[in-house]
Length: 177
Image 1 (tube, rainbow, N blue to C red):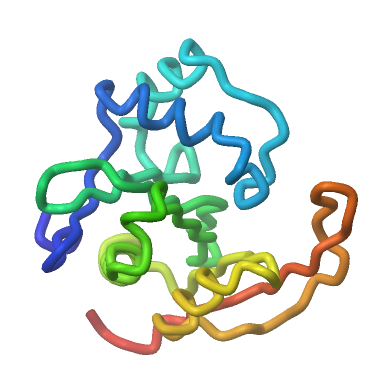
Image 2 (image 1 turned 180 degrees about the vertical axis):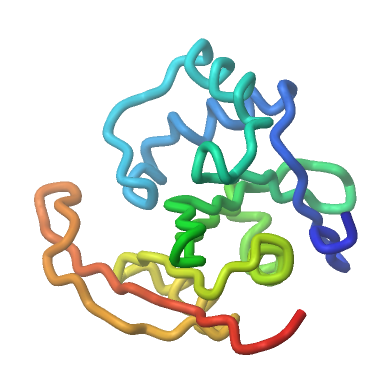
């Protein structure tokens, strides 16, 4: 699908071979804060998830894609969640796993590709994301793609004994793709 292919990055559906990659991400405590995770996942549960990953977004209300570079290496994941077809909106989240793959444009290109896909093929009117106030890289990424800060949720997440603020960002489709 051309919509999900960029210059340096492409997005692809989950495959059974992604089991270890996803297991490692889901069990990396250093990034649990981003996904509000507090418990580990077994390979068994992730395998079951992968067996059902082919289901239609209209049925399961979410879509998870793997971010790949053109060496065909999985470097991250990007998600559409809380898919609400009636109101034509969804949440979006992104993770580029290893620091050596960050700040190289992969996240930006993946977000751009998925945004276009959501507006063109899923006929969404808007996308939103929630970003911790101290996640400067994500704040910069979403702002660079036209997402606007529309709210501040004070003391929203309790992380390592302190409350952290979280911003709500929104992108409304004003273009025709």
